[in-house]
Image (cartoon, rainbow over all chains, first blue to last red; front, side, top):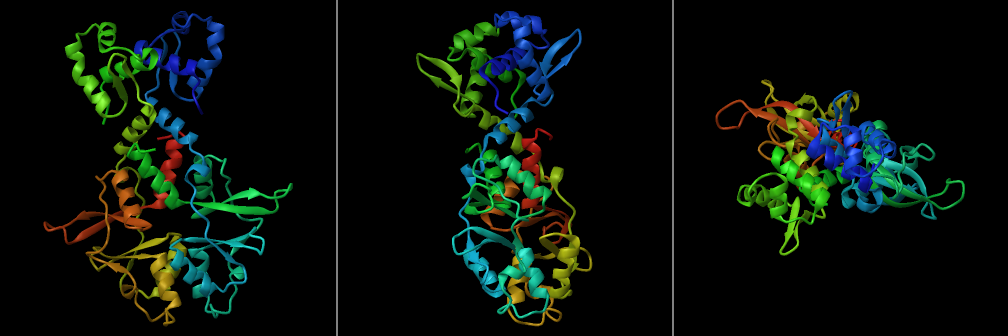
Length: 211
Length: 211
């Protein structure tokens, strides 16, 4: 959520003069109380302001947290995504593991001849195959990968917050960042990857004030 | 860094009326310019306010980022750490992999008879062992683990920011959270683990304003 200039003004007034009634805020801004009502509703619902009858509006005890949330919600997947590392579904599990070490990644995207997303291979998938006892050089990656349409994806336009929530809820290490190449959204071009490492790095940048 | 009430007032005034001179801020707060100087110095040095001669103070173009950084720096490892999952160094690589699946973790802590940290086992270590071609049921975990004193650790008192920086710089998935049990800090009790998942979950909580 992005505060409008007027909402920011209201927060500044409440920060300075709270507890303050909506009537007093309205006077300071040369507005009617009715005109102010939607903004006050947004600010209280989002947890930035709190209101008590006969007292007025005051800053929530968690104002900074609300500002942090506001900042985090602005960041898009496209701002932080990494390059995708891809292999073909016909590659062996052994080759996939070697590839993972060479590229130094924890997740590989599996694509078809046209570069469209077919599957995702995690370290967990490959470990499971490795203790299965088969011949890793002969087993194709397609046997152990998670395949379409069961892959959890994100897009460059999605917020990193939403993407991070998908990572936690679906218990995966990485999401392919995709763009649909047909009308039905069945064919997906892989344009990047978003991982727990991406988010940890972003967390460090935010903590250093560097974004 | 935690802003004092007066510093917060100054930020609110500058947010509302900036660019504004220190004289004007002082008048609004019924203070002398001299009394205000230390607070203004703190606020400009921390990057929250900027000052231009003959113009006055205005909010830095990155004010919210500074506040985000401030909030993130407050969070300690002890506030968010998870439970450690441990095995013994004598366990086989096969048992370690099975354990990892049962516990649903990506990193196991290896401890001695007294519960002191001896090593760390990642999915990467186990995958490397798996393609090595040996008998995983006979190979002890101690052969493939990262061992003391090469383990990157954190403590409950350390900030999550510092711990996250270690994860990125040393390219590991998880840190054991430890407490020294002797004077030299050579024997470490494992009291938790901090992983990229922990940080991703924390990122989601911060983005939802829920911490």
